[in-house]
Length: 629
Image (cartoon, rainbow, N blue to C red; front, side):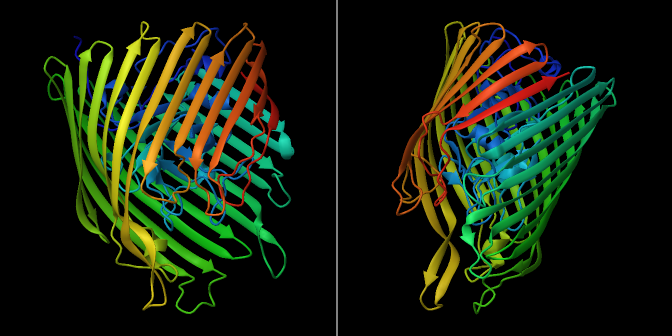
């Protein structure tokens, strides 16, 4: 058996069937007449690149082709359903919003959501969360600059620390790989006066490469005063000093605003309004040798959030840190990664109206900060003629507020037959309390401890039909403790945040990809979850996704997706939601570099709700054009 080079890093992967276009061919605007054969995908997010089959964890990937075929400009909308057990809340035609009524909450296997988030969002390994509330902002992620998205379904805290308690989502941005200048322009328009525009420019001259991506969305919304407008940009530049050393810098800025008719001021009858700015910058130095690879990343992110009537609110936060790791291969089949993370995040609430007249409430918050330093070590070893790979990792957390703690993980991968892979793992995850939970409003409790969970899982992957068919079955049990709950205290006369919550979630996940014909491919996922939490929002009991990619003739491409949701709890007075969405996109290529497309969402005109008091739109239609040159 051929020796496999394994990696101790928990990065991400998954299976997909997609049209066979390289990054170079897509940027030049080519279109091919076949779909890819199912491949052993190599993970390229953080730490060393490695085959997904060598990692003992539940991992998925959403490819650039899948992102493009969706026609979405909001990245989180693409992920929901395409990744088993991952669900994202939505509230309208476009735009997730923030605060009361906001959506974009992510749950994986029932863990995560709002107002806190136990799922860590990252962009090229850089953690993304607002300091006050310790969660991401869903509208900060556009599809224009994304090459792929890698997802860990389960705790990823050994490598990524706090907020990766229930999983991690790593957005991998595009890189210019072809010499010269390549540009793409896209525009679409449709229901409810919704318009979306995108621009991407990729440049490579010798050792220098860059990427600029711009995105603009706007809509009137599904009702009066439900408008939304957003502009965002991502800029990245890099230089290859030698075949062993390179460096990159990037900057991402998002600004969006909108109204919400659900909340109207009693004084001036004005609807709730939000005006949000999020920005992030990072600098990376990378080294690549035969037996060692590493990165040092410096990052800084910030936010400025204004929310007007009926509750005027203004908060600011920032987050800076250093991520450093080096991986070594000391012997055949062996790999060790040593890493160190340092993070410093702050939060300040300058104004928080609506509650200022309530005795005992803290309606503003002076600037608070938390520092955390965490070394970690992860190792893998092939044994018994490469039939078994053992993986183990340990993070030591040194937090100035919450003290010190150990975060372990372990796993095993077996290769009993050439096309069969068995995996098992156990991992711990944790999440630090947010500044809101610690200091803000009556329930505040500065003595809270981090939340934690343990996850146990096993999976089998089988390749069939000359590896044209890939099947994967995963079972898991997740147990959480010290969850932060708001408990009423009669002696105090008001509720208090306490570490009293527990949960036990268990379920199964199925993923399949089948390359049926040279011009036809399908991929599908299914997940079932049982939880002992009676009223768990944003986490359906059953979730099914089925996608078809078909090239009937040379100039035509058809993409169809079916997504079924069952047993979704929304609110006590709302019946559990069960619905099926049928979406389709047809693309026509009249010439090289030109794509004309039509997109229809919710063809069955289903009536359903994900966020309370926000009925989702019925059938939506869009037309668009994309030009590459």
